[in-house]
Image (cartoon, rainbow, N blue to C red; front, top):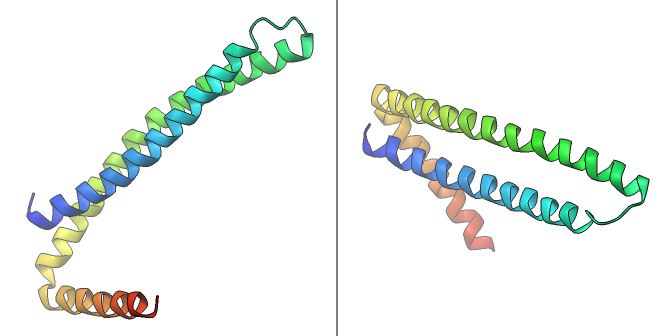
Length: 110
């Protein structure tokens, strides 16, 4: 893995880890809320708690699967970028310069 692959992989991994961390925190907060209603005897609350626990279990499995897929896609994107850059160095340099110019103009206007 070359330097560009490492940078792209690190950036995508950082963003995905942050999103996954936020989602896991949301799940933990929801679990805490469900636990806080455990002592209630109202049938409506029991039904909602049961449904919420099932939904949270599915969400936990979904986030684990998403984490794996996202990691695989980030690695594939890094490899694809690496192959493009090595196959088209001048086009890559021009694209990077163009993006740098656009970003610079946007920052300057802010």
